Image 1 (cartoon, rainbow, N blue to C red):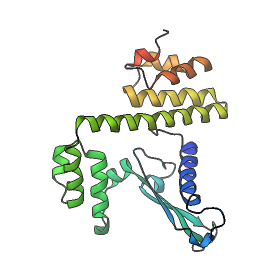
Image 2: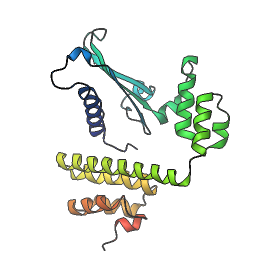
Image 3: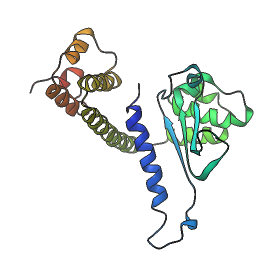
Length: 222
C-alpha cells in the first residue's frame, strides 16, 4: 500500500523538483544559465491503478506539455520519472534496451534473495549487490535511522493532509495502512477499533506508531 496519499506524494515530488531547479541561480543571474533538472523516483507500491492501461504501465515520464497538443512542449527543463517497482517487477521487460533497468528493479525488489540476485547477469547490479553485502552492521543501522526519519516525515505529511481534509474516515484509513505496513494484516477487532475511534484517539495512535515495538503497544493507554 502507498506510504503517502497520492495528492501528498505528488505535491512532495513537485516541491523538491522545483526547489532543486530554483536553487541553481542567485539573484540577478541570467535565467538562461539554469540547467535541466531530472527527478527519478522509485516507489515501492503501485501508484497509478485506476484504469487497465495504468495498471499495465510501470515507467512514467512527466514533463511540461500542452494538454491538447502533447507534441508541443513548453520546456525540457523539468522532467520527473516515476518507476513503480512492484508493477515493473510483475510486468517484466521485453525491450533489450531496458535489460539493465530491469536488473536494477530486481535489485531494489529482491536484494535479500540470493537465488534471484545470483541469476542476474548485469555487471553494475552485481557490483552493487556485492557492495551491499559488505556493509557493516553500523552502516545498516545508519540506513535504518535514515529510513525512519523519512518515514516520520511521511507520517506527519499524511496526518496533516488528512486533518486538513477534515475527513475522519480518511484518517482512520491512513492509520490502518500504516499499521498494516508495520505489523502485518490487522485482525477484525483492531479494524473495528479503528473504525469506531474518535479523532483524538486516531491522532494519539498515529503519534505512537513509529516508536511502538508491537501492535498492542500502539493502543496501550499508558
